[in-house]
Length: 217
Ligand code: GRF
Image 1 (cartoon, rainbow, N blue to C red):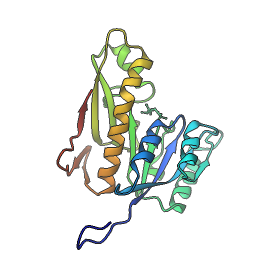
Image 2 (tube, rainbow, N blue to C red; image 1 turned 120 degrees about the vertical axis):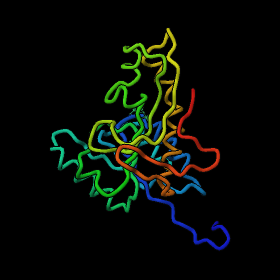
Image 3 (cartoon, rainbow, N blue to C red; image 1 turned 90 degrees about the vertical axis):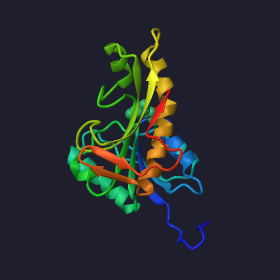
Image 4 (cartoon, rainbow, N blue to C red; image 1 turned 135 degrees about the vertical axis):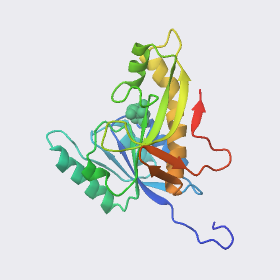
């Protein structure tokens, strides 16, 4: 329902790109209920048969698969972009999407990614594995806007998670994951509400009472 005297604003249309099990997708689907400023209108996977597609179907969200194998990067990016434009998408979320997207895809809409490490440390694959190998005592998660680099875009929020002596890659990743979900939902809300302003590498967010950009595990 609209607040008294204010026009109701349509929820932002979100396209989510996935490559795997889709727990971050699930967090977004669960958040996108009445009162949330965004709706997932399309889920695209680059890999057929992944569990994320099932989650989307269960939520009644249209899915499609655009395989990347053998497709030159610019053509893949263009096909993906065409699909999401066709769906009227305003915001793109990368939820465990294991492809790097070029500038041709990124232009013109916010693209949000979540990464299981405290960026700028440990970008790329296997964040928790890299953190353990480096001997850090604080690992974590980062949600950020995507630029043309790998995990280099403006940071929206971060969570710290302590590394224990007996941690394995899997145990650490499992403790980081719920923080990814919380950070992602909060970042999507902030972007959808137009509260994020980017200046160089820094994102400035108009925070609401009770919101903070960091979480502590
Ligand atoms: C997450 O840890 C995400 O940060 C990373 O890949 C994992 C995907 O998990 N990029 P899920 O598919 O969202 O469950």
